[in-house]
View (cartoon, rainbow, N blue to C red):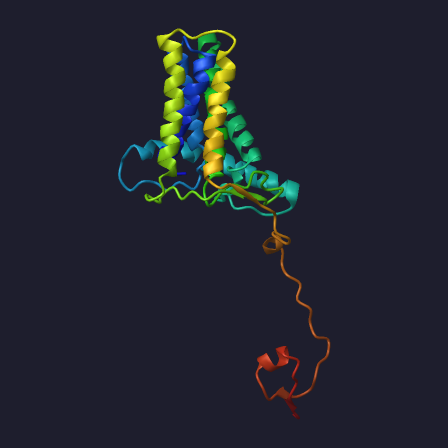
Length: 272
């Protein structure tokens, strides 16, 4: 999906969870939502830079972390593990389970190292909340992208089995993405309303919030006609040089006909 879809759906899902986790801490909810939006943008290393300064420019800057830091680190590691060469611009690197974990771990190191030097408990709590949101955003990014025609390869680079749906994010005639927004917004609004208007608390809060989140994701996957495309045999053939057998038979003289005849097993020669 495109950036604005990722951000909107991720914020709504995060609000549903935050209603159960930290209902009385608006500041922490804001931090978690910010982290979730960041995580929802990080995997898009293929994002193109906007020609003019606009809101999407901030998303492009965030995505540069994945393209300039994480992807170049992944390639040599995967090459050592598989013996194959990878392109650092291949979006499959970050649109997989291993890629998401690598993105989150690298981002956590870059964030926590300077924060830990401050030895400030409040800063550590804010960073932890931000990282929780970032992981949630990364996972939601994969779930949302597997509903699209391009799909994801969840076990790349160890398997090229693909999961894809039928959504075309740029197709304005397809109303399913708008339905996703309406449904997510309705569920989030109902849960938040119970929390803040009727002070809904107790043991049932977490199960209800989890049920609401799962119903949103399941509805999106179900309406997207998601299917699993198995790995094709010989998918890595392009990474190795093909073996071309040579004909050991040689004939004296000059050929009377072009090489196409030789490829068909027809040999015509003039005596030299």
